[in-house]
Length: 493
Image (cartoon, rainbow, N blue to C red; front, side, top):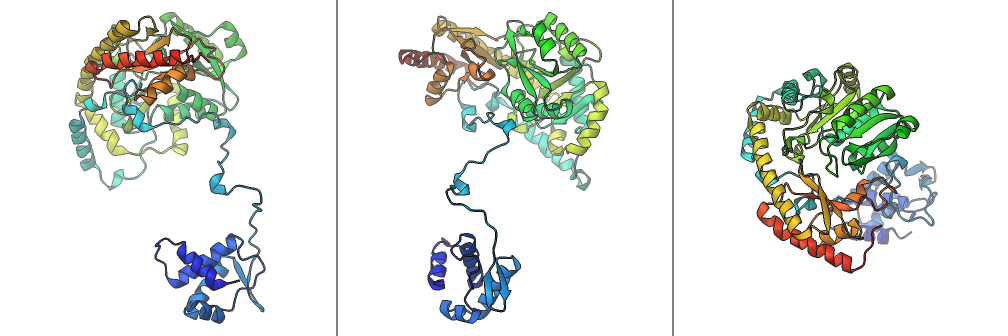
């Protein structure tokens, strides 16, 4: 073994890292042993001889040997210092670990989807509010006051349910605006709708239970249910919302039923009153929980906001979900759940073990933002703004694409649904649009695999972040993209 060459090569690989000579020797020998350059059973050169060869102090060599001994890489025998059998697994025929993609758990395979956060600022991205219109200066003042109120006693873990004044503010707001029946004890603060869904899936159902999901429906709910080991059952959606049949009630008795009744995601239909009552009756009979995701009901424009399913009957088996990502901004990462009275206490005890609340300053600031009237004022401004942008989009679609797409879902929310009337794939249109700086989320991808059958073929058009004066030009550009894909002969898949 040429230790001089080994040490010199190692120094060249350091790329400017500043290490002492004794540390360099230790790292060099350690890597050589791990990499198999110095095999198990090899006797290392005597400390004095190695010091002479490398022209370093003998104490530096002794330091390196002692550290290697302490870590089990070498052992001291009467014959000298010998490389130990470190028990590394054989690597012949295998790619280096850094080059192999790790295998994730089976329950989450198929849930991976690349996401570029920069795409959130492109035209027609759904689910993103008009971020440039948010009153950041007012929010900053609320945050500054919240931070000034914090003392040492506030720096530990918070209450598992969240900041009590915020829960009270949410409860009062929901009773007035959404007809939700609740007290602050039934309100739980979470880190977002996805966090709420993950919690419901883990706490309210066992692995193997059936979970019903609108089809097409919100992919985040599918991810939460599949990650918890639940069997996801696709339930078709029509103009009146989720439409389960008698066979599904009988053959796939659900434990969880996920529904977006006020503005179905992604098609935009509204769950009729008859369907709402049938769903409540069926859930009671099946012993199921309805998860009502009310993600953007604040922005209903054709009449007053619809009453929540949760408030239709007393003690409804409904977990009501809401979020501030759509009404304020996604980076806030604050959402809430309202649970039935008989579930509140056991859920709070469970969260005391599996969850810890934090970010108290954000919750205090949000409480002030609501109680001061800033939240209500912001919602009024956004309703007016989004109505203008929706109307501009509807007019442009009618003007330029009336023969190409069928539009639905404009009664509320922040997006429209546009079904293609041409035999081309929505995924192909989406890819072509992204290449030209436009985000069209294909409706077919919101169906469970193998269930679209070309019926759900179109895209979502989010208009919240698009200025009204830009919309006509963007729709004309969209028409050109669709024409280009159509001429290429891309067929629906």
